[in-house]
Picture 1 (cartoon, rainbow, N blue to C red):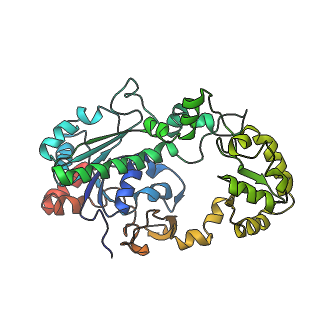
Picture 2: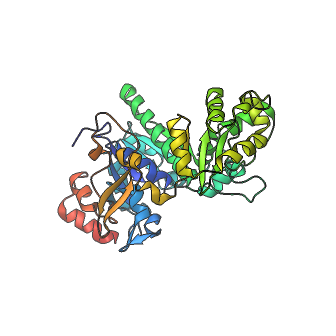
Picture 3: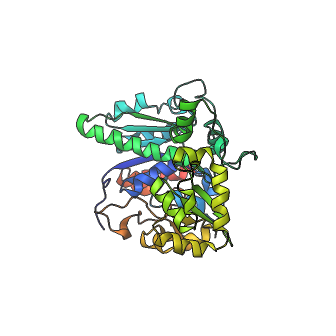
Amino acid sequence: MTQKPLDGIKVLDFTNVLAGPYCTMMLANMGAEVFKVERPGTGDDSRAYGPHVNGESVYFLSVNRGKKSIVCNTKTNEGREVFKKMVTKVDVLVENIKPGAMERMGLGYETLKKINPGLVFTSISGFGQSGPYSQRPAYDMIVQAMGGIISITGEPGGAPVRVGISIGDIVPGMFAAYGTLAALYERRVTGIGQKVDIAMLDCQVAILENAVAKYSATGIVPGPMGLKHPLISPFEAFKTKDSYVIVACGNNNLFNHLCEVIGSPDLVNDPRFDNNAHRNANIHELSDLIQAKIYDKTTAEWMDILVNEGIPCGPINTIDKLFVDPQLKARNMLVEVEQGNIGKIKVAGNPVKLSTVSPEDELPKGSAPEIGEHTKDILVNLLGYTEEQAEKYIKECH
């Protein structure tokens, strides 16, 4: 097994469902040892989310592979003591409960940094640790809505549409991993940890890119544009004889070449389309002219033509097609793993490819844990409990 960048880093995962677990999954992929703290009995809420295969949640599996689970009721004195002992043994704590809840349990950053000054304490919440909304609960769709993303998603004039993945959770998880790594890097110099404060709403605003730029520059409120790009044209989906093909021309050279390929060289010097600003101003006229040329061939036929001509393009794949895509196979992006009662199942691979890590080592080797599967091991081998003390704790915990 190859060395990974975070080998030796220990992470206490006090998170639930998606944003927090996604963060710790990213750290685990890079080699960190992750101890997942779960409620006795029910564990992480996502264990109840489908689909289930032979009683196991594939949703839970997808973001918790390779972690170690310990049951710990932090509402009890004994549970809090176990938690604090673990804090003294780890480098990072990630939590995603409501702001102020850690402090009310006596487990806030100001308390824990006294017992571990090097601790990186990463908090993920809906609205952050400060501001007038900080005490509000939040879920993915709430921050998608409040962060403006839903307002620019879907067809013009249509009903609001949620982004098809839980981007309100996943992006904060990614930013939390990024912030955690930055704090760990600084700790190498100072020896001191810090608190990392990640708000789901902040993260939605941070990825708005062209929408913020457009409103800031023009005062025009962006709206949904379906499968058209708001700033570049042609950069959209065109209907073919059997489905759709995406064509993206990010500069004049590509547009000019596209015009030649589709048999419309006259469009190159048309003053309505001779630069990107003019193309955007006349986007619907241009789309109709290109569409008339695209419709007479299948998507596969256009893909052959456009790929050979070096014009950026792509089909709109359904999820099943990802499982047989040769590029994704070559990049190890759908990986078969062994999981408990399920047996072999495919999960998403690690998109971060490192020259020092072999493809077979890109994901943690272990399966997703059963609730409290590693409680005894952690108590005995990490915290120094005797076998009898560990067994007593486990009995009382349940």
